[in-house]
Image (cartoon, rainbow, N blue to C red; front, side):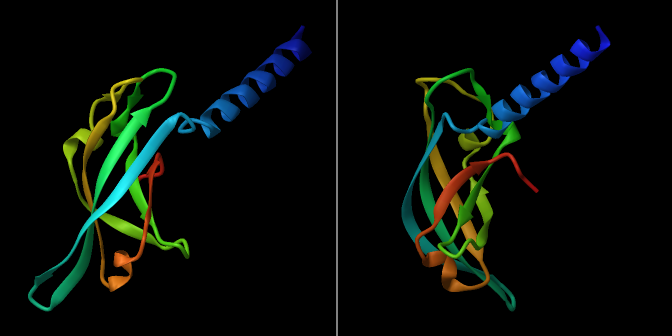
Length: 126
């Protein structure tokens, strides 16, 4: 009886980990590059790139956006800092058939942020 409980626990853990790994497989992120800019304060400056972002939930339950963040990656894998984002992309539930759309601005100390970027939704927010 005890062995079957252990096997059931291990099986349930594997199923849970598999479901967690594919947690965002049903969310589509479409981004359109909009404007390039710069900002400076005293001697410090940064380059900015804004995107129109569309988030859609293709199936399943609503996704609480508060547990996720947007990240931008360059072709070489470099990650860019999210500077500004519309609240609609960060709060509330993303329900099936009810997409949300808003702006997000990413920044960098160098102009590489102007290159094409891949925008992704991530649960690894720091």
